[in-house]
Amino acid sequence: MLIQPVVVELSARQRVASVAISLSSKAASPLRLQADVLSWTQDLNGRPVTEYTDDILVTPPLVEIRPGERQVFRLAFRGPRTSTDELAYRLKLEDISAEKDAAEVVPGMQISFRSNYDLPVLAAPVGTAAPLLRWKPCPGSETADVALPGQTHLKAPTPRATATCIRVLNDGTRRVKVNKLMLSGDGWQEMLTLKNGETVLVGTEREWRVPRSPGSIGTPSGVQIETAQGTTLKAEAGGF
Image 1 (tube, one colour):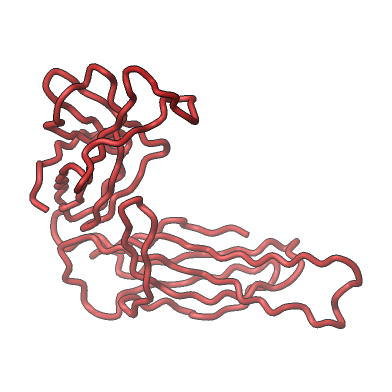
Image 2: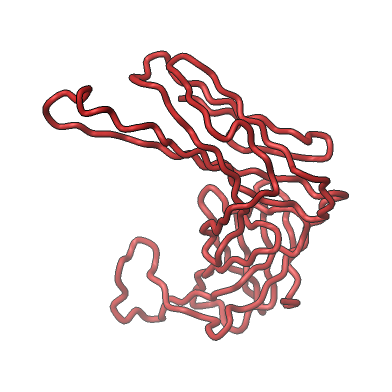
């Protein structure tokens, strides 16, 4: 099965977005999908937090796609968009294909697979998108013990390996994809590289633990973030 696109974009110019699903002609049976849109935010670890919403209409809400066929879903806001912040949603396509009738089942072991598809839907802010990041130490715990690279356990290392926990808020109007996070203090700088990058949605907070080397002494005083676009943003201290 082929899905295009895998990220759905809505904007003032593009008020209706489309998602096309093509089912291979070699598929063994038709595919029945139920479409729903959920609002999307994140917890401190970046895991999605969703709930059903009626902000966006998706049509058709229920389809059956036969082998070799192509189905297009269309998404549009139910009313006028006025938000100056980027809005984030997920398009959930749930496989509700019926189980085979007992008469159709061949004797022996049977394995049935059902796949659900979950695509990000992002609505551009009204007006100019402006990046703004804020940071502060994690409440109640500024440092935490971490294992050195390649180690699963620490046996009283000298000096002790530590990491500083910081919390970052996206206080801007558009999501930011973080590739690197740089923590600095009095005469030192440490860097945390995030594999494949991690997205911080508008209005959400993320926590990261930045490993500290023995020479990085003292309280951190600054945070800079390198984005997936190659730009470097200086996070402002506090404010949340």
